[in-house]
Length: 124
Image (cartoon, rainbow, N blue to C red; front, side, top):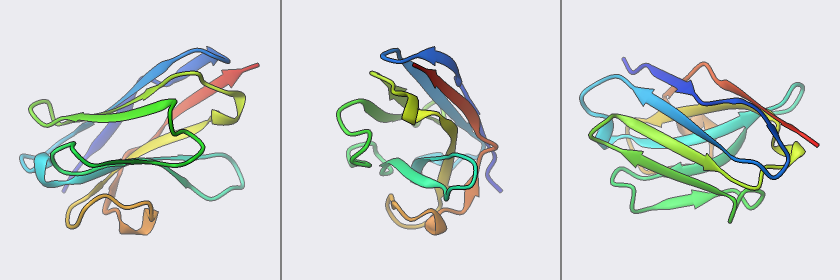
């Protein structure tokens, strides 16, 4: 069983920055691909960013490319999402997810464990 706990969400003005963290339990975190997803009410959860086991492979949704950066620290069992130049349309609940077999994926159905989510609100 893997537990994921996100933190770092909040209210920020457009153009501002936030850094989300996702702390994972378990001794095999370094073998998990990790992803960040976001969801707004009445819409499907959408992929934001993914990272492979070592952190060398990263992928981003077009909507956040150049503004968001995903990273991981396997010694701390933590994955991060640095969000810069935030826009009102980035407002959502952000969740991290762990995939215990295979590399990163943009498909939410490929992930095995999910955190509870953290709210990010960007005001105009």
